[in-house]
Image (cartoon, rainbow, N blue to C red; front, side, top):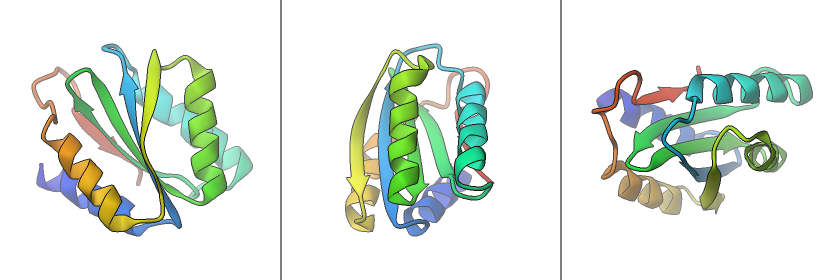
Length: 124
């Protein structure tokens, strides 16, 4: 849990915009989704343009993203078009670090470490 919190703190300080998405669905392949996002972003904006953290919660996955406004909009568009998740909800999108941290803290209460495989991941 400490390592996850370190990644979240990093995301909260990076980029000009932050966004939090709740991806609905039980069988979301986060390895494939994040690999596709990295490939898409590196082709358009450069290798280091996307910073993300994800963690499993009951009923889905929370995806946290930081970057420029265009990067955030591209991620949101990709989530809507990709079919990697059944549906997604935008929990937060904006500049504010305090609001972002508040929303993430509320979602961390539902953090699910009991599922097989990885329960969280982050960009490097």
